[in-house]
Amino acid sequence: MDFSILQYQFMQNAILAGLCGGITCSIVGVFVVTMHLSFIGVCIAHAAFAGALLGVWLGFNPLVGALLFSLVSAGIIGPMADRGELNPDTSIGIVFSLMLGLAFLFMGMIPGSRTEALNLFWGSILTVSRGNLIFLALVTAIIAGLAVAFYKEIQAVICHRQVALAVGIPATLIFYGILFSTGVTITASLRSIGGLLIYSLILNPAAAAYQLTYSLKRMLLIASVFGIISCWTGLATSYFLDLPSGASIVITSSIIFGLATAFSPKRKLKRWQQAQLTG
Amino acid sequence: MDNMVISIKDAVVSYREDVALQGVSLKVRKGEFIGIIGPNGAGKTTLLTVINGLGKLVQGQALVLGLPVNERSGIKLRKRIGYVAQVENIDPRLPINVRETVMVGRYGRLGLLHRPTQAQWEDVDRVLDMVGVAGLAQRPIGHLSGGEYQRAAIARALVQQPEIFLLDEPTASIDPQAQREILSLIQLIHREYHMTTLFVTHDLRTLPSICQRLILMKEGKIWQQGSPGSMLKEEILSQLYGAPISIPAKAEIAF
Image (cartoon, rainbow over all chains, first blue to last red; front, side, top):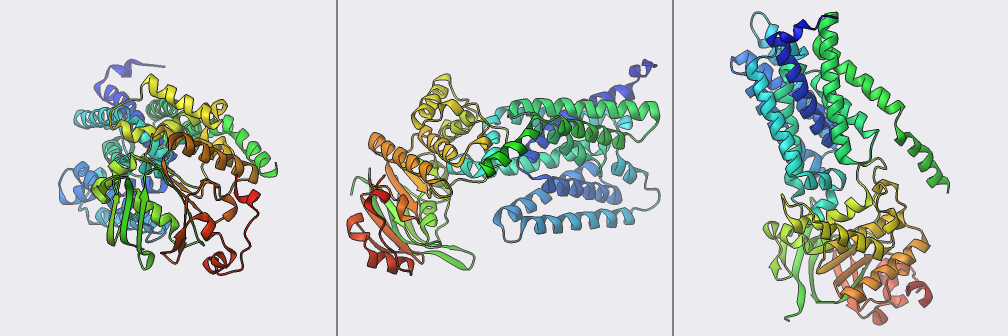
């Protein structure tokens, strides 16, 4: 196998984008998976995609549109899920379908060639620019820094939100921080992974790690390693077999999740739960 | 009046169209152990949430530990108030163990950006030992039985070093043996720490004998209150619950 390709700038950018994307998506993924907020994350991902397409249509930076839409959708979904005026599944489903509708509307309004829009759709880690890479690296550093700085509050909120609230932790602030971090992470990874596939990279490594450990610190570490492996393996597959990069990354992460589930020590839980019920 | 830690006047709380509390007034002295009973939907839990600032007052005032209860003071107050709810159904795969869960009680007082010290972890171990679950410290929290989970929840509240202890049906959904053990533990804690304690239950058999005052709630109001001896009468309880009630034998209620 010829590795001389590693000398080229575009491949170095892709490898670094995989490293940063793998880490940051996995960190927010751990929070989202532990809080059982998967559908909220999917919804934010589609909002970011719709915002980016608005940017392409109106001629401003798509990432600005993605950031605005993802933050606004997080700001709408959070209270809807919290206040319980509607069933959370219903309210999030309505926002999700609205975002999908807007994405297709903006796509339809884009005049001429839709190459940029399609790139946002599928993602292309091999063509990620220096500017995008710096933005992604910055977001990764901020998300990882916040996760370390507020680790104890985050752990309390994602595992015991009501308890966290009752002991005087600013649980609502942390909850919205997690939703906004998800939006920012999706925005930063949009170009390399793609609007349709980004959420799998958030969900799969974290869900795989969730199968393997009862320690949150270990879960963050394992998920990050899985995220990086998914990106790099997907990248290599994409380059050597000439396959779409975003799809390769997501399929790799899905295989990792399948393996983690098959070999999960937590599978024993089912037997333990049955024993509890019958005993 | 100086030793009054809770003073609620004409509190009204509503959740959308439902009025959960209708003009409730209550004063609690430091160190009192109060039992709150009443049928489901009587407003017992809502009264506790008014005290810890999670329930939003539509009308009326509440003064707790010298602070007026409002959104701004809520977080400050909750750091000084221990709260134990009934056993919740939690994911057995949750990535947090019993020791870490108990330490969560301290996080509010610790404040943002501060890590627990070795001495604080030792406090957690001491309290776990006191409530009888030291051997389960490293076990994932989702793997505990109902009784063990409640002991851990009580340990979490104790680690918080609260001045007021709110217990919201802590013995619901657990077996009778575990209920007896939890009640003994609650009474032991009250005797040792002299915390102001409010204990909510709808099951008379789980009313601790240490109770100094009994509040009877019905339809969002304090219907009657007095000493347990004067309140635990079949006629009063039958009116409270809207059905004939026979008083459990003393052995059944005094744990």
